[in-house]
Figure (cartoon, helix red, strand yellow):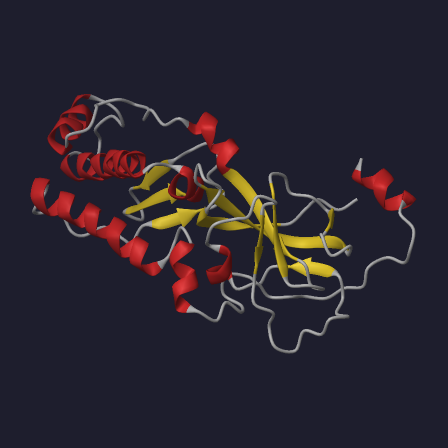
Length: 247
C-alpha cells in the first residue's frame, strides 16, 4: 500500500537530511491528535529537507535528563544491579558479584537469560520498556536463582530441585516460565519521529515509511524511536530505534 502511494504521489522525491529530536520534550502528555511540539534545533531552517530521522541514543540528545526515559538509563541499571547484588549478598554470601546486567534488544521471545561462562544476566529491552515493575523484578530474581544454583552446583539441572529450592528462598514461584502478559504490550507500543519542516513530533501505532505532517509536508521516515505509552497516551519509556523496511 505504501508503494502504490509513493508511485502515485506527485512532486519530486524528498531530499535527504537529518533533524535531531530532543526526547526530553517528547516524554510528556500527547495531544488528542497524538502530536507534541518539540524545540527546533539551531541551524534548522524552515525550508530544510523533509526526510525525518531521530538522533541515535548516543549522538545528539543534549540533555542528560532525556536519557532517563531509556530502558538502559544509568540510574535504572544501578537500581537493577543493586537488586541482584542484595539478593546474592543475602542468600549466597560467599558468591562473587555478578557482571553488570546486559540489556538486549534482540531478545524478543525471551525475557531474560543467564550466561554461566560470563556470570552475567541479560534482560530483554521489551520487558524493561513494556513490563510492569513486578514482572521485571520476578524475571530478574528468576535469573538470579539460576546464578545461585550454578554457584552451588555447576552440574545441577537448570530447573531442577536445587533451582526450585533457590526460587523459594528468593520468594518467587519455582517455575520454568514467568507469567508476564506480553499480549498487551503491542497495544502500548508507538513510534515517534520528527517533521523537519515544522519541528513537530509525530506518533504512530505502526512504523511507516511515508507519513504526512499536519503542516502539509510529506515525510520519508528514516528512523523512529520505539516507545512505550501508558493508558493516557503518555510516553513513559524509550525502548530503542527502528528503521522502516525499504523496497
